[in-house]
Amino acid sequence: MKKKNIAIVTGGGGFIGSHLVDLLLKKKFYVIVIDNFSGGRIENLKKHKNNNNLKIKKLDINKISKNNKLFKNATYVFHLAGIGDIVPSIENPSNYMMTNVQGTINVLEASRNSKIKKFIYAASSSCYGISDRRTNEKTKIDPQYPYALSKYMGELAALHWSKVYRLPVISIRIFNAYGPRVRTSGAYGAVFGVFFKQKLNNKPLTIVGNGNQSRDFIYVADVADAFLKAAISKKKNEIYNLGADNPKSINFLAQIIGGKVTFIPNRPGEPKITWANNSKIKNNLKWKPRIKFKNGVELMLKHIKDWKTAPLWSPKSIKYATKSWFKYLGNEK
Image (tube, rainbow, N blue to C red; front, side, top):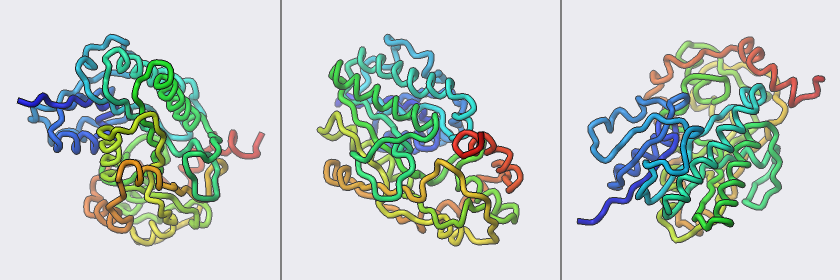
């Protein structure tokens, strides 16, 4: 009998992580989820509760030792665990450095000592900072806030472990992922959660600036597919941009969702456009995005009630929640 490939997914209860778990189980992997469920949700994995090929371990990556037995015999490690959001990173930068940098190093050490075949790191396109053009993997790095810096430092650590310890690494810089299970709680930030809750409550959609800013949205199933292709490929020690290479405006998103809109002030530190040149990942991994943006949003709208418990944001509450954003990234002293 052929031995099953063992995949560890840190952050496997999260938005992207849970979709990756879905795909890996479908492909007959034995999957070990490591998650402290501070951001991820056990409910995201509930449909697999009777699957003998899934093991769920509630564990903080800050507490993973280099000899952690979960990593023994693992084939691949997909490292998606970490903490996100801009405002909390500005207010508590040390938390982000501890988890997104030192936590990543903990996972790297456990992976190195287990002699895995490949370490896949979930990096962030926020490392590029304020860009007004299509970006490739050689575009200047310019993090604008601690979250972006911490994710980039995690990437540097992974690539350093690759260089020094010969740990095969792929770093994937995710642009604007969206899809089912995108975050429904916590700090202000995720545009889909904000808009869907407002739509459910017949409130105007709060659009930042004039709404012409655009984002390179990539459907979560396409993200999971790219991670798996990166793992099983012969490529190693590479960085890939992961986006649709087809930015869409926030106004267009609001148009698909429908309803009234209201405009709130522009925010410092935010790019007018995020735009992934995805030629490298398409050529190297034979990957391409399959879900068109409008179709992806419409798929989400069919399950809009999933956002009924999400926070309801208003211009007033958004202004209060983003005070630190304007204070530290704007001109206010």
